Image (cartoon, rainbow, N blue to C red; front, side, top):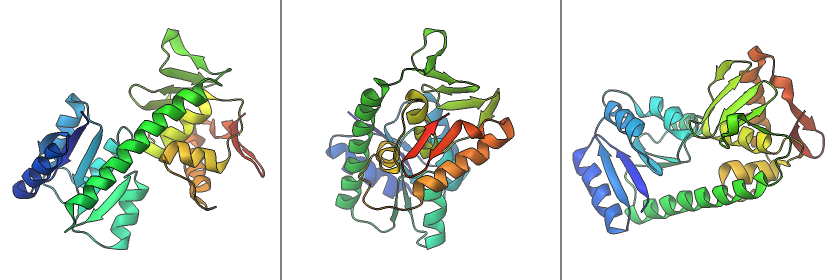
Length: 238
């Protein structure tokens, strides 16, 4: 049974979501403030978060990067501006629904995100078969080392030359794919479908932007050059 955290300060809306989703086979935990959501997330395991932006305590905008590196986040907000949508999606949220919304539509979006998570896990198993050259630390198969990088798949943390690197969910998944398979060249399509868990329908700058952001975060550690652009093909580790 998939476990969903509902972070919504309006008690009626929160309860309505809980009852609806539980009637469709999900287990739900309620949070009525950003602070409560953060606390619950730190002590329980969730498969997906429904997140309101305007909550007391800690705002939803602050929680997006914290949650999105670990589970899919669907934002539910009365903020309908393009700027708001772009900001939270860029911060790592998987989806954005403006209030008021239809519950059946929300249910479908939840199903899609959870289905993508399953596909991503299956892709991880497939790609990891070709991971010769990556080094697991101390026999822990969920910690990968590459030169001065360390990627912990349990805690979703990364260090580069001993420095902690803060990554969005998609950035972490891109690096996970590369570090598991350091000798392999990955096309933009392969990277997108792994990190986003959905079909790559058209050529765009999404992967280039994310790779650029990752390199920017790694620059201070002097390890940004580890990601090599293979012109006309994609990216690999060098």
